[in-house]
Image 1 (cartoon, rainbow, N blue to C red):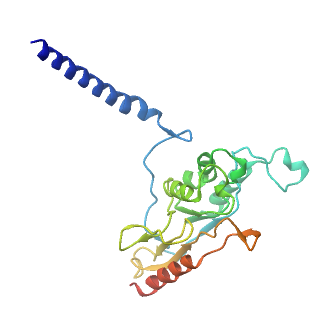
Image 2 (tube, rainbow, N blue to C red):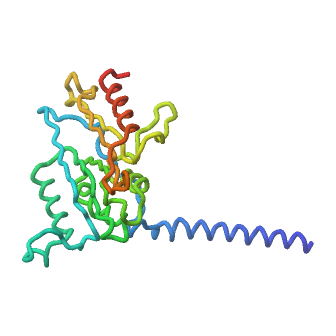
Length: 251
């Protein structure tokens, strides 16, 4: 009799612990789960596929070398009279103005998006740097420069993180069509291509008429004892030639 009561009590406590953990996870921790002070949410996707407009235009806004820091990092290489009030916020405001003025169909961020040595939180800096593009709900993509990885993330981690941000079409690397997984036999991170179709309702509506190729040019290197910048490697060129051939022939 006593043994039966012990088993019943054990099952009761086990059920109580299970319910408590469930409550803790879904009603308390889920609301507090944060990534760099941002609540975890499902990624918001842009309208796809990318395509030309009915008037035959497809406007790309290219943004390079923002060198974003914490959001309040001071500007460099400005007049002494401007230094006191010039910061990352000037970059944010300028990017917002360009988006409003140009109304691009797509934004390409082409490296040195953040200035790694000026921030101790790469994720937070990325959110702020790409914030205007996400706020505008525009499709965008990015590659890395030589400064992006100087903070708290490796180049692989950076590209993986960027690929998960709202409205981002960035990819860590191209997919291997035979394995349906990211290609590993290619140098760098951030090698991929995006395809833009013809105008809606036209005879080119379902055809790719523009390919946007993104390549990781690396960060820094040492050659024969001399420090220099990275470069695009043969494995990347091989992939580029193959992807270009597929685009041209459709095979």
